[in-house]
Amino acid sequence: MSRMSDQIVEITPDVLLKAYACGIFPMAESAEDPGLYWIEPERRGIIPLDGFQISSRLARTVRSDKFEVRVDHDFDAVIDGCSEPQEGREKTWINERIRKLYGELFLRGRCHTVEAWRDGKLVGGLYGVRLGGAFFGESMFHRETDASKVALVHLVGRLIAGGFRLLDTQFVTSHLKTFGAIEVSRRHYHRLLDHALQGEGDFYCWPRAVTGAKALQPISHTS
Image 1 (tube, rainbow, N blue to C red):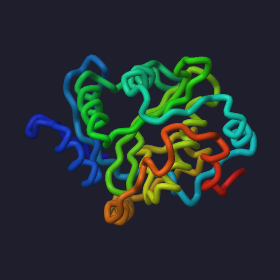
Image 2 (image 1 turned 45 degrees about the vertical axis):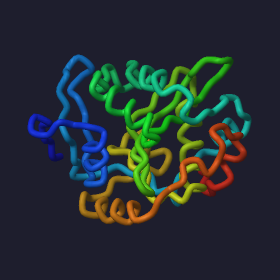
Image 3 (image 1 turned 90 degrees about the vertical axis):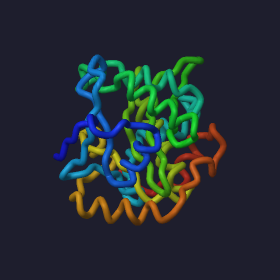
Image 4 (image 1 turned 135 degrees about the vertical axis):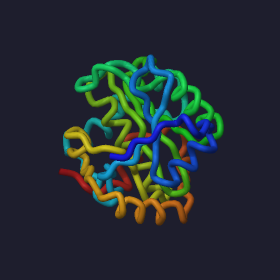
């Protein structure tokens, strides 16, 4: 995995978007570390949009609308949630520079959230960056069972409906494998990225809040 310091180039929102277009993304060592470094994995995680897998049980949960799913409603709350310790993630890499950079991209309409709400409380969600026909997933969290999974299903349905070509997960975890996530070589990833950047996905092809049944319509793969 290639790793480069940010000491030479000041990272701005424009630099960040150009980095994504080149297959590179930033991370920090910890929330307390003010520095950032660039990452370009040898093996890149993606979820093929035409190979997304969802269990029958989760599909029922999505269809039940147990969670109210909103898009781009509360970016700061999602970042706070993604900064919390989770199972398998004792500490966060989201520092103040990450918050500021992605907050600016959110204001530009380039960073998006998909949020799961229940009884007026945010209980799960995710955020990521949109560029051309690619969506780069950054982080997700849950405070209730299935909340982040439902948000991911809504994201995938929206991406398929909006004509996106690539869902980048950066890395592959055992959790993401259950949805069909795979690893591809750096060379293959760049081919997929180049193809995705030739188009322009429509993230707002649907309203900001849709039902679970609507989100499931474009998704054909269940297990």
